[in-house]
Image 1 (cartoon, chains in turn cyan, brown):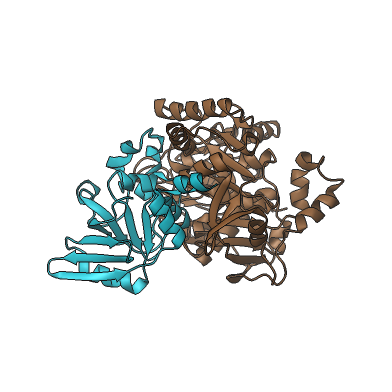
Image 2 (cartoon, chains in turn cyan, orange):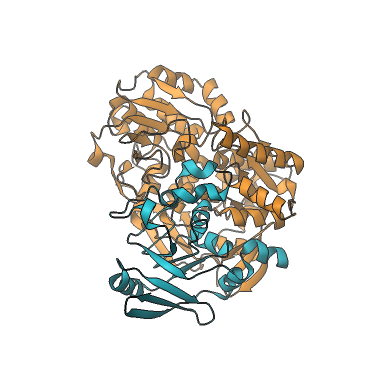
Length: 174
Length: 433
């Protein structure tokens, strides 16, 4: 199973599309590693510098409709090769969300007010997250502050994460 | 309780029900192109599982960068080409016989009412025009589809968009779908199917229905879907005539999958287009849509007519009607890319390409190229493109470029004027079927 804990990257915007996550000109890459330096290269987000702000991060917290647009699985792969296996948002585009779980990664939706609370408590601070997949909780921590956040993903999504992805799951079953 | 067309397709294709509302469906067709398929092929090879579930149900094309522009894209073409040959995938369309996937596959009769179709491409939703369930997927879903012929989905929830009214002059399927996306919003249909119904859809050609369904994903929709009718039968007849006694028999068979009158919808949207004007996008979101007259005068650098949204023969005809006998503005460069080799040929025979060339257009071969900023018309920083494509995302047609989405008629008029303008400036003739 992949690692779902570590440092959080806050992307304070809605509707971040997969062209922003990884521009189409890099879809000619022959290896996933070639995507690594180009993650979020074209994002429109004030104060965010992809060259500095991605390094050392392991999870993204963002707002609504993350991953809309193109179906390119290069978007989750670009996250994966940067050691980011978890995205938490109010909502996701269908294909992006499925692509994450299909790779044994997680795209977890939380209620709007919970995301708002997380942004107001932790944005701009060095925040760590610990994921407990047995209890279905995230523990967010920054200096002196911590908050436990429950989440739910379906039994099927749990199975995909445990299997390491849809290919592994489907190959064993169908 | 009645069922929607999507629910009926799910019920007839169900293989497994691994969790509450998840169904694993049997696939009737798996479409492949050279951008998202090579990773699936490489992964299958590396796992020692380089097999295909049924070579007759897999269709493949090289379309995104055609011809190859560099050694990477040449390698992507080589991988899918050799794979197609190795697995005896006879419906493989290489350069010179190819076309934009969502245009060439319907043109070959590969999509039928009631089918389940996947492709590693978000605009697979186009094929819903035939009454098929056709969602775009990522590479892993594609890979499992190639290997096992199955894919998992949430049980369908549907939004019905009932399009009514009289189609105004100068308004086309593109204007209608832009107005629907504006109304639903960028994620208004996320995890849902958009069922397009109503007298306006009934009167549309298959080409117009494909334009309508093509942009369903821009509202987050899993796919668009139209009911099969005699227009569908007529379009498919050359491919299905051996399977049915006559067209009426084919229609009767297809009609079984149409939604029941008492089907349950998540939402029903009544969309009257009587007062709709030609539409255009602004900004970087496909739901940022305005009437053309509110953007009138916005200067542009490039015009692009093509893509899986609007590169079909009807689209080229309507643009040619606007362009006939005119020249494009001196400050504008314009590109037309007939979406398939067949359309290229047909538009050549009909004299359409001559009209484009006389007007000052560059005519390119079929390819997705410029739409996603890969080749054949990429923008420079600060440049503005009037485009018949489907996404105006930041950087979509080239880093720092701005894209305004519009119909082929509006794009043609804009090419002549040099700024965004209404096609009715140049023609009052209607183009609807």
